[in-house]
Length: 114
Image (spheres, rainbow, N blue to C red):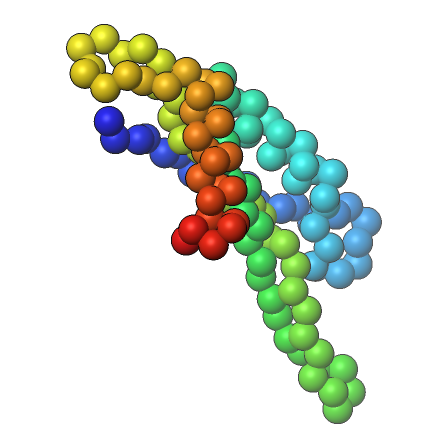
C-alpha cells in the first residue's frame, strides 16, 4: 500500500508594533500551525513533522557587516491514515497502530538506524 502525504506551508507574519522586519509573530504562527494540524487530522492525516523555514539577511552597521536569521514560516508534513480499505489484501493500520509504527521508525533513526 502506498502512503499519501500532504505538505502545507504557513508563512510567519511580522509581529505588530515591531520596527524591524525580522520579528515573526510567534503567537500567530503557533495559532496557524494548530489550525492547520487540526484540519489535517479532520481530513484523515497524521502530522509527521513541523519543520521551520529559516531566512536570513545581512547589512552594514557603520564599518561592520551584520547578519541575522529568522523563522519565516513552517512546513507541516502529514501522512494519510487509511483504515480498513476494502478490497486491499494488505491489512490497513488503525490510527493507533500507525502512530506507534511512526514513533518506532523515529526511535530507530535516532539510535543510528538511518
